[in-house]
Image 1 (cartoon, rainbow, N blue to C red):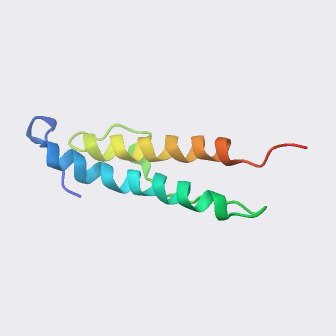
Image 2: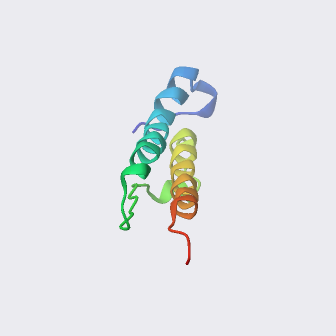
Length: 82
């Protein structure tokens, strides 16, 4: 991970940073129909999801998105109460 000024971040840089979060979503989506009663999603983020780190805008943005996605999927995919 290299600190970069936001003004020098290219579209390709954004795409590369976002790909891992998108993959996590599609992997969870594909796995959901195969789960039985035991359901777990584990994604790894760091403090950049919750803190502002100068020079790491795209890293923080993608980690924040990963945390939000994980929380949302936990709600959507949770077993329904009887």
